Length: 582
Image (tube, rainbow, N blue to C red):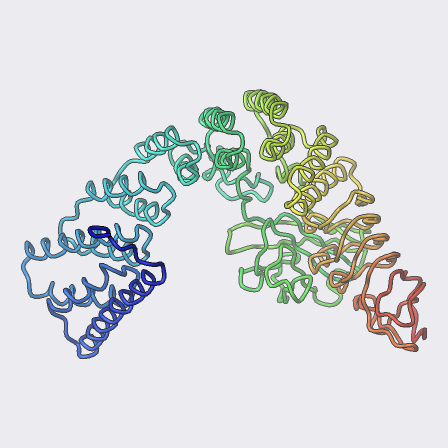
């Protein structure tokens, strides 16, 4: 037995580790308390740097110590020459680098390093770029380092083209480098921006101009090259999501320009409705209404009290200002904050009038494609279909095919799109609700396009398995809407944007909330059979109409209800009456 090493039991090892941790913790707490006492006493000396260095070397995420260290450095800086200050901060950079080896994702380290470089008389940005390269080679998704690199690039004057080449190298070595793909998406619009439309003939913003912000998009020539790069990536590894996400960005449209998209005026209500391209807070946006050349003092409000930021805003005109049908009026809504406006003429004999851009004119759901781009996207669609034959269960491929179809011809590919959504739900059931909502969004967009091509104000989407409602601001002028036989759970506050709605059919859904129907001034008929609308019901009671826009004392006639349950499965608005008891 002599000469053999005694193997310690697990219990013994754990006990020794525990004692070692307690010893280290005791030393750390003692040093921490000493540092905090020195700070409280206002001592900013070399000893403070040494004490904080000991603590931060083992725990670089102690933000208070970094703050104290900056106070000390600023104090020491005041009593030293420029060369000594340079050495002081260079020494600090070496210390930070050592801390980064302990935790490469330390918020405190990266923030302190940025601060030190602002204090250095002669910062070495080349060295800092080298540090970023080393850190990203160890962890390509270290977002702290990516953020710091952007600061270094800005300060050092590295060109956008050089940074784009940097992303080329990283992506070339690893297609799964999501951070590089994302960084690339921020560089391309700077290096290869989409040309702005010729505005020499019109210096003022046009209310009917296409709401595409060209400065945030990539020119077509470069865009076609990027398609090929992403194409090579996802054919190499079809299940990696990085290239698919980048490809979705390439297919996406630019954000819409902030503009007034529609002005609607009603003689009967003596009310003006204004729709914007984005949700805004009109009360703080400098909105001004001019009627027949005279500015009006009006109070703007959203269509629903809960919508503080809304794409649709209303105001009431002075009594009698437009009610006489024999008079013609001209209205202008000025959005002074954005230097834009929109005119609307209310002609003699007309009870209402509007001026708007259609969804097709705005390129709201689809951008116009050049012949070359259309040809490339057709080829991409064909390639993705080939990949789908090899990878029939690949959700990224399926979703990309849907997006390509929508970019090329959303109406022509509608049936195929619906079939692919059904397949997506089967291969990726965890995200079934997301696909249902996205499918609902695309169906609503298609129906808006069809409605505008037909030049009607009737919106019908019955029996389409809708799960959500969107683009309701585009339905401001709709008078009749049919949403029956879907899977809707609620009529949200945004539903109040349908200011012209007269007839609503929403039978056979799962609607529990009618919050969006509270402020519809023209609503006359509502059908909500076979839903799940909740009311507190007693055996004998009055049910007040929640649609306060009808009349203050309007009531519902319920078709059926359960005496013992608060769940009304079926009801219909038959008439407006005073004090109807049920």
